[in-house]
Image (cartoon, rainbow, N blue to C red; front, side):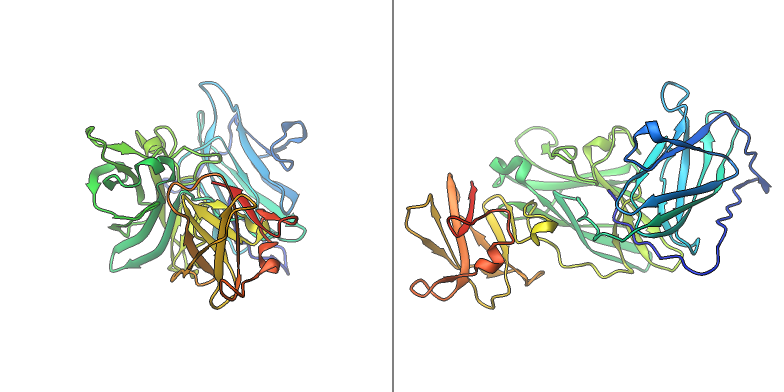
Amino acid sequence: MMAMVAMFFAGCEKEFNFQPQENGEIIDSTNTVQLFYSVDNGTKESKGEISTGGGTIIADSGIYISFWLEPATGSNMAKGIYEIVDSSSLNFIYQSSVAENGIDIRPDVGKYGLKVYNISPGTPSFFDNITIIVNGTTPPPPPTQTSPVRLYNLNVSGGNASVNVAISKSQWQAQATANWFYLRRVNGLNFVGNQAVTSTTDSVFFQLNFSAVDQTYVEFNAGYHDGSVGGVWLMPGYGNPPSILAGGINTPYGGSENFFGFRLHSTTNGNWELRTHNGTLVLSTGTPTPNPIPGNNGDGLTNNYQVRWSGYYHYFKTSLASPTFRYRLGTTGAWVFITPSQLANNPDYWEIHFPSGTTGEINFQWGAGSITTFAPSSTEMQNSMYWDIGLGCLRKVL
């Protein structure tokens, strides 16, 4: 699912006129391949066909629009390069990195242009002058599900690029104290393994450095040494849903399913972006990186990300300048107080660490005061899905 930044189109009508050329001549648009679309989450019973001469598609915000080429199955499956631009025709909203049969998009309110070209098999052809008009109101963008990976601090300078990486160990939490490392390769080449990381109880941290060349594809992973050659790696496809950074089987390179990956993209206005293999924007030098949301599990957007957690580490969002935190096992045990620490990279959150080995139903609260004058912050805690109105505290199982 892509978080797309659209520019609302107003004023005079504008044609999206692409002119794909080959050896100076416009590519022949005659082909038996057909392009279809759907505006109801891909249910093909309501599909429509788009001619090579173009057309207009009307959709509502918040609803997926599906595009696909026919034939869509078998050895003759049609594939092409999809490009979607905003109303200025300058900013790519979506751009295929390799030929693909179909795409799903969910753009914000606005007007866009679509073309599909370099279609195979058969005579080279393209679909052009396709206008997409999205009406309605723009909902807040969903969080980018790169978890268990977090990318931050993208920097491009002097022909070199770097980005910081944090990866949760939650998949192999039982091996949290092992000797961890990271590995990488660029454009499917120059594999480097057994690289040093900064290791904490639940995550590893490192920096990727590579040449600032447009369309460079960087792949990486983390693992721990168990005595076997190469150690044990994390499985990028693990989880439901898996990370949007997870590679596909042999796509774009052999063995890419064993790596997380991103593509470096140069924009027309001089900024640089990191995008997934499928084109989803992850980071941009033109947009300040928001404070990272800690943890990889817990409350979501609708809960104001009030409580997050990873392993025994828990994070809570509070406006209190110096909060007090307490917990107990079950509903009748004695309260245990823990001193929380404020996160340097996101001061809205405070971190606590339940003792390793803690299991069972845990009830917890934060608030103001001390052990003897504790006053819970019920208004903040009620935002969380862990809130138990009967107990007046947060409740979950470790």
